[in-house]
Amino acid sequence: MLEVKRVTELSPSMRRITLTGEDLAGFHSASFDDHIKLFVPERAGAVPNLPTLGEKGLDFAGDGSRPEMRDYTPRRYDPQSNELDIDFVLQHAGPATEWATHAEPGHKLGIAGPRGSFVIPTGFDWHLLIGDETALPAIARRLEELPASTRAMVIIKTNSEQVRIALHGQCAVDVRWVTEPATPQDGPGALEAAVRELSLPEGEGFVWAAGEYSDIRAVRQYLSSELGVDKGRIRAASYWRQAQANSHEHFD
Ligand SMILES: Cc1cc2nc3c(=O)[nH]c(=O)nc-3n(C[C@H](O)[C@H](O)[C@H](O)COP(=O)(O)OP(=O)(O)OC[C@H]3O[C@@H](n4cnc5c(N)ncnc54)[C@H](O)[C@@H]3O)c2cc1C
Image (tube, rainbow, N blue to C red; front, top):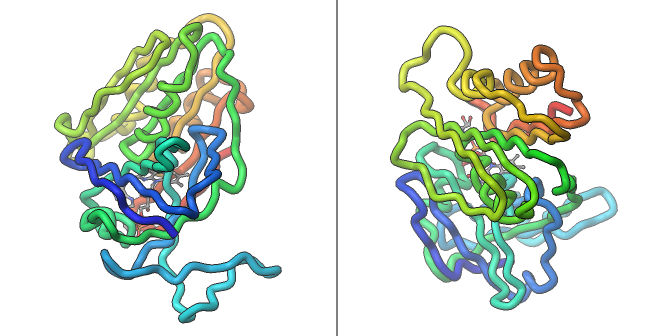
């Protein structure tokens, strides 16, 4: 059980919630690709009923209620200050977003995990990172973790230019922001179209992609079937899906 320490507005559609609490001691996240499970209180300021891990999985004894659970990226953990940052995309309706929109210092949030980590070596010649705003926390973290000896190409799709945030890294970084038109167009979506314009550099590389289900499925399909990228060099996940709550899927 953690408590909100600080709230920082990163952009008109992204809020950083900094959490702390005794239960956070020893927290470890080995990969930017990790996620933690959030146990979301029924309303801002309420205390979620947290499960214990029983033989048959999660056991919600306590008052018997089952909080909504959603997956989020551990953006930064600082053991010195015992702080964990989570960056929430706002502006759609859902329990996690609703909670984050109204979060204030002192509010409670339950977390669990990460349960396991998919660690992608940093030593490739190049890294291609693709995603929408929900992937931005993972991409921003990855750029901060990559060594100066490599290079990264980043393609990020947002719904508006106003929500772009500064990204920092030691390696050579080429960031391409694309905006999805408000009205659907014929042909590939903005994310896939931007990936199709890219020329992959020489050398060994790895592609990481996360975002809305259809976007990521199309991007992965293009990369593996048309461009011939080895599927073992692509990590692609759906972080959310249109008209579906609490969706998480891996394409590999
Ligand atoms: C591994 C992993 C890591 C993730 N990391 C982050 C992160 O760091 N920050 C972050 O903000 N999100 C992240 N997400 C995405 C987040 O879990 C989903 O957006 C989640 O559905 C939000 O929960 P909710 O309760 O707000 O909405 P839900 O109740 O899940 O969904 C309600 C409705 O909103 C729609 N919806 C959900 N997400 C979006 C969206 N982004 N834009 C528009 N409509 C949406 C759904 O289709 C549904 O119709 C991550 C997801 C995964 C699987």
